[in-house]
Length: 231
Image (cartoon, rainbow, N blue to C red; front, side, top):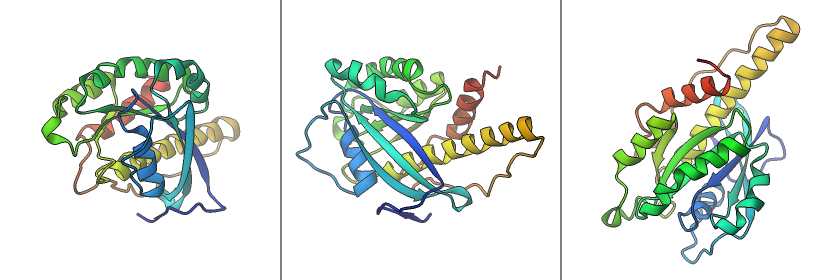
């Protein structure tokens, strides 16, 4: 898939994505890896909210500008961060696979998304720091089980060695695009009696070194159906 780490003057869509999770799980490092292909071992905790952008080419050769908001995980910043959920169409719920408490707090962050983000916001669960396998406290099956119960996509990543990072961001951008195209098509049909735009060929975004969960497509579809109020 073609993409550019340098910002382009033109793009077809702009999607706002928020990263949520406890302080220290590596949210800022994930953003830096995706937008700059950098990792800062001396990175400090985010204060308030920061954001970065990257323009990528996805399905139908559309250029999507991802506007990624990195929210502070500390409790004292949550009231500040909540206002930045508005307009978000995608969210990555992040935890540290070596820190049990960060995983136990994921339901709290999921509720914040449900309470503050757009009603059609798509959510992906991300277990970060998979390079620290010898310190693992959260098994893959634990993350997968939570994702299945809550209708979320799931992936494990390493901001340190870049495993799964592009896959996570590109996959959620791809699914957001599909959702936006479908919604626009429905609006055109209702307003003008036209037909919905046809979808392009599906692009597989799975990184060879880190596959997404097998049921990820189904869960993304379930999310879209649930947000539309489907039974």
